[in-house]
Image (tube, rainbow, N blue to C red):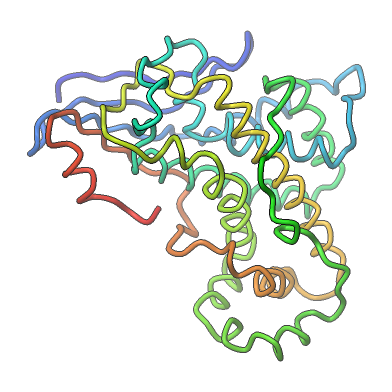
Length: 311
C-alpha cells in the first residue's frame, strides 16, 4: 500500500457525502487505484439528510410527476451514485472532456454507478409503495434541497411506447397466455425473489445505461483521474434531462402496478413481460455498491478490456 485518499463530495453547505476511499497499490500490471465504497451508501446518506430537513416553505414548481422524475434522478443517480464523484463541481475540469473520442468512465466505474443507482431505485420504489406521505415529502425536499440544473436538456429520443403505463386489467392471466416463455424463464424466479430490484434494474437500464452516457463511456483510454471532474455541467444537464424524463415515466408505471389486487411480484412480472427489451442481462440483484480498480500504465487498455464486466 502506498497511499490512502478519502473521497468526499460537497453537495451543499450542510451536506458532504462520503463516497468511500481510494488506495494506491502496486499490482501485477503496475500501479492500481482501488476505490472502496463507503460504509453507508450514498443513497442512504441522502435519505437521512432529507428526512432531517424541514418541509420546504414554498411549494416546489411543476407537476408532482415532473418533480418525481427530477427527485428520482437526483437521489438515485446524480448524488446517490458514484456519478457524484465523476461530476464533482469542486474539482477542475479534465482537459480530455473536450475530446469526443476519449473514454471518461471506466468499465468498473460504470458497474458501480449501475449497481448503486439500481439499488437506490429499488429502495425508492419501496418507499413509494409503502409510505405515500413520506415519499411525497422526500420528493419535495429532494427538488428543494439537492442541487440539480435549473434547466435540464430535453431528451432527444424517447420511444413512444417505452415505459408508458397501460390501462390493463388481469394482465397476469393475459400475459401468461401471450408470453409463456418469459413466464417460465429464470427471469420469473428472479422477479419473484427480488421484484423491486428487477424493476429498478429495468428502469435504470432505460433511464441511464441506454442513454447519452454511452458517449462518455465509449472511446479510447487516456486514464481515469480522480482529482479531475470528468462530467461537465452540460453533460449533467443532458444526462439528467434524459434520466428524469424516463424516471418520471417509471414512477407512473409504479403507480399503475401498485393499484391492482395482484401481488407486487406478479405485477412486476406482468409489466416486464410487456417490456422485455428494457430488462438488462446479468445485473446484480443484491449488491448496493462495488469495488473499483483503476489501472494507470501504457498497457492499461488491454488489461481493462480483459476485466470487462457485464455490469
